[in-house]
Amino acid sequence: MPLQVGDTAPEFTLPDPNGTLVSLSSFRGQRVVIYFYPKDNTPGCTKEACNFRDLWKDFKSNNIKVIGISKDSGTSHLKFISKYQLPFTLLSDSEPCPVASSYESYGLKKFMGKEYLGMMRKTFVIDSEGKIELIYHKVKAEIMAKQILDDLSLT
Image (tube, rainbow, N blue to C red; front, side, top):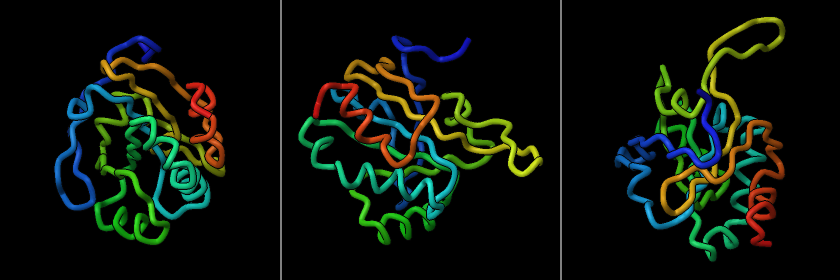
C-alpha cells in the first residue's frame, strides 16, 4: 500500500558526507523535510537544493530540519555542499537504495527510450510526531521549498 498522509514515516539511518550516521528518529519533536533527488550537480537537483538554501532562514526559524537524500557518495555530497553553500544535511542512500525504496522514491525510470532503475524526485514533510504530513509526488525543483512553506502557511 502506498505511503499516505498520516502514516508513520519509515525509519532510516544513513551516513552524512562525513560518515556520521543520521537517523530520522533523532529529529522527533521537530518537523523534517525529506527530499529525494537523482544526482548532485545536475541542473534540476541544483535548482532544488539552491531553493532550499535561499529559503533556509524560513525553515530554520520554524525549527524545520531539511534532509536531501540521493545515491551519491559522501565525497560527491561534500563537493555539492561546498560549491553551493548548502546549509542543510545531505545523506547517501547507496544502491539498491533501501531508504528511497521505502519512501517509494526509487524505481523504474525512462530516459530517451531507455528504462533504468533510479532515484525519483519526491518530497515528504514529517511532523514532530514522526507522521507524514505532506507528500509531493510531482516536484517542481525550482520552487519546492517555497511550495512547502506556503502549504504549511509559514510565509
